[in-house]
Image (tube, rainbow, N blue to C red; front, side, top):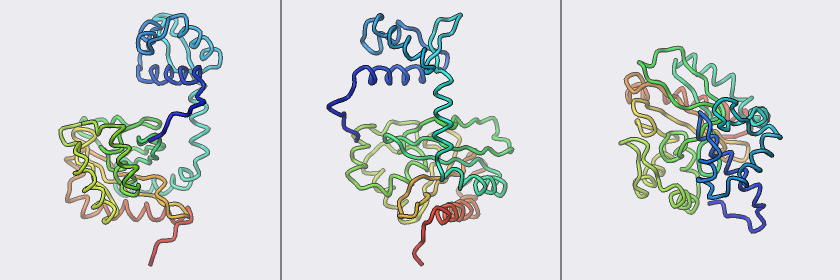
Length: 263
């Protein structure tokens, strides 16, 4: 768990909290709600919003007067993504994986004990009316998805305990594993078999299989997954074809990053 620095600048911390709150409200959020959520006077919140708007991080809707995220964040986000060499290395292989399997592919990293989607390549196949909520830049609890669990299994037990303490293993669906002992038992199995399955644990009707990507030092730095409607991504199709296709792609990406698998 990330500890709070003793020399944290209060203004920057407050600005960060404002950005988080605005990001959670797709239709924008008013100054009154921000003031209430932050437990700060409206005048203080207004000064922070004015500064953030001037720098392009926040904008105000002319009609609703609500505050929304500004384009400066999109600009910075794209710069960060473009700096991720692993994404550039992986992209042609992920496109090929989508073509071969006809399922949606995700790539994620872990940040602040959550998975962050850094790439998503969608299939043209029908999803039977189901729509995955994932998008580049969005976050999910690590314990409820295959890509999260396949990265957590390489963490020291102390770090997993810290995550459990901080995140409280929130229940996303009726299938989400929320018991710490059960999660740890799953992680041991996942590490041994080299892949993880999310059996409608993150989204109802969506099944997913994830595999880790290793760098030249042998560290699991990100993960990729195949996701689709449970009626098509069946347990049988995972065992028959999808598992092999995913693991082989993950290994090829890892090798391009300098990873050398033990013979």
